[in-house]
Length: 193
Image (tube, rainbow, N blue to C red):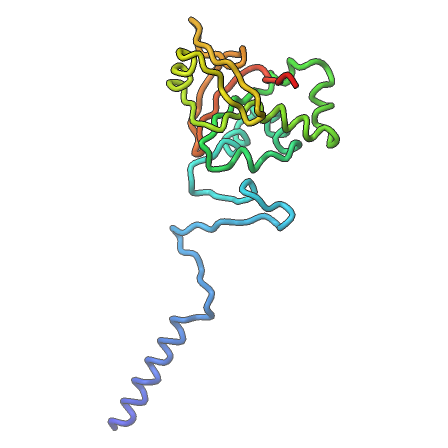
């Protein structure tokens, strides 16, 4: 009798062990999230799908209709990874209407594959590789400092009666994102080459 009970107990423990191990594949629980990665040809920080962390600059831009042209330009220039990096970054983001102010045909020309590097240069002129919330922009203006941009160029920041201006254009709105700041502007900051 003791031998049968011991055999049943051993069998029960083995069964429990095998069931608990399953097939070795862990299934996510309800509160866990998965991170998806794009196919190899699309690898880079911008290809990571993260639904848990606070939105980065590119995710915010993609979520707003006012930035459809900017997002299309970022993708055409292939600078998505630069806009989603950990930062801090300060992005002076032109709204769709800003691109409409460019001379006729300019945007269509810039979006052509053969002009990818020129478009990337212009877009990098909208990104400061630093943390510039409005308060810091005002300090930079008071000190007479220009902002260094990822293009290698500098933009002047000024405080006027009606707001903060960078590169001669007024900041309309400011949004904090996970990797820095987006300052909304209504002109494209085309650098002198």
